[in-house]
Length: 302
Image 1 (cartoon, rainbow, N blue to C red):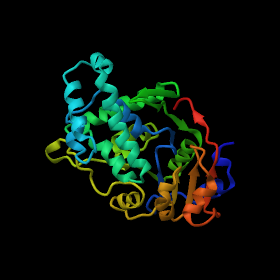
Image 2: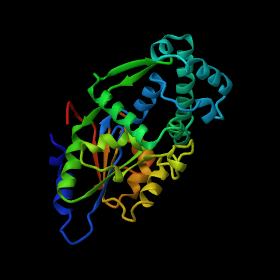
Image 3: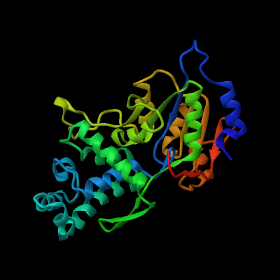
Image 4: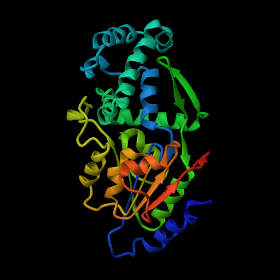
């Protein structure tokens, strides 16, 4: 069944839209797990490691890394090598494992904003245009790839992303009714841009983690606020004073953004997580302002 046939969605769409005189209403969508199944920010991190896309040593950028000295040694060993020789070198798997371990350990410890910003900081030394090109290549490759896994740094990691039908249908229905649609993601902004570009959402309405860029070259400092949890609300408020009339996300990390919404809240459960636990974290059960999408369908193309 199309999400547009859901009674709550149908009533909402019939009741809201731009009448030509008022400012357009606002709708906000998360990216990973909401508009696509998969995590495009993490996929870009994996691609960076696989292709050794570093202008600066991760040991220099991640100064708090517990094995920083070893990380620097491995980087210096691998840097002069060509891609084929690098991937087959004994140092490569250890190098990848140290990068991945730092990120996933941070997530597991609850340092989500720090961990997500850290993997973006690894693009220090590039220009925004260069990272944007990497992002477009990553998304095209992940969208074309069969859904499966890749082996990297001793871990089995996901490969392949797919658009989710319910979110795409809803987003397009909102656009047709004059809504301004924004993307607000905890992944890097460049990785999210091509996901929403295909849906007609311009880069100017995409919020994600960015880096300060004095003189045009990306630094290793994440721009504030980092759009994670309460930071998503702060980042959105920094760009528009209007609260969203509809918010769609898959994650309880986005509860602050959900609760900031002054209208409908659409929870897309693409990862099969416990709905009761989600609402325990929210502090209340679902009411008429919530729509639950428990088994979103994948789209093969768009």
